[in-house]
Image (cartoon, rainbow, N blue to C red; front, side, top):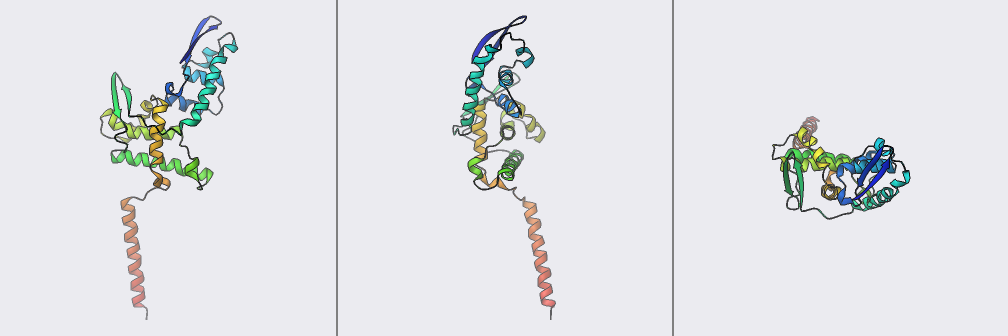
Length: 233
């Protein structure tokens, strides 16, 4: 972290921002990526938790230069974050006053079935959207899931493990608020694992009852054709 006290029109303002990715939460990263246009003050505001209105009161704009340099450095580091193969051994949540640590590396399967189906749909939709935009050729080499999709997949993966609750689709989706508090260097490698390990999600899988329906439909068509052939002189 870098901290500096800046002079304002009516006093002083203490500004503190991260200098390395290990100090940035997934939520902060998502907020920066969701901005269609972001200048240095926007980034400093998100990273410090200080509103732009408060930053506007700083007397000398040049005082922000030291923060701007670190913002540019972080932007450069982010480019390589998606390439990280290091999955953390455990992550920790603060749920109210309770600290919950979850072992990750020992169990990288999405459970229970409801969470698996939800995560599968999120991943499939994200991959299909990428292919619709850029084409299917070489999509795996260029594909990078959105931070929102990563967050939503992790919410499905961690909800039951962290809370100890029975799976509930809506509560699992709301658990994304807790996922946003994870360090981005923890969250993205785990999310990347799920996106890279489910290549068969390019197309939505057909459910068992859909397959059964198709089977019986084909069988009825076959019987009609057979009857038609035997009744033809």
